[in-house]
Length: 181
Image 1: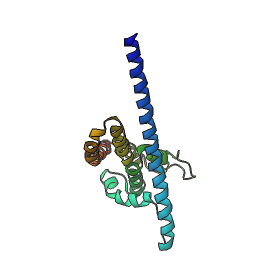
Image 2 (image 1 turned 60 degrees about the vertical axis):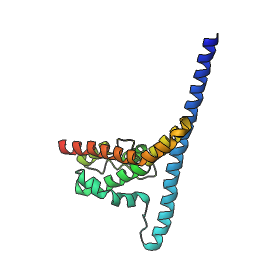
Image 3 (image 1 turned 135 degrees about the horizontal axis):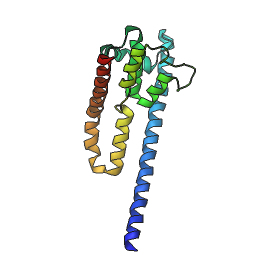
Image 4 (image 1 turned 90 degrees about the horizontal axis):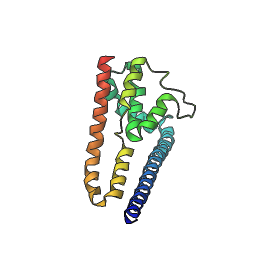
């Protein structure tokens, strides 16, 4: 009976830890997406004063990631759209970027994939397929902080470089697709 009690105790602890981690991940995703909407609201409000009525974080990141999208081999007419998706993926997460690509995000924006050339669509699908984003970094730090608080500082120190390395690895995959297609 003692053996069975130990197994049930371990299962209960595992379930509690799993629920705690799930809630941490959910809270992180909600916080990141909410932050992006708040930043977009402020930028749009400010943009009206300087004559840029569609000033959003997505537009700014689009121009920052423009060289990367161009280097990946995206056709010229699609570079800004794909670079905006790349920026959105890095700041929010890949699910938000994919939903923007497919039009599943709603808001009446329609589907970006219908506007992209087949080459740009293929490159963007591979470029968005990765977990290198600020939300994932926050989730890893929160999860490790929850499971092993003594290692939280180590993970925090390596998190940014791991995110950049993951983003570059995903970009390399998209570059290989660009060469082949």
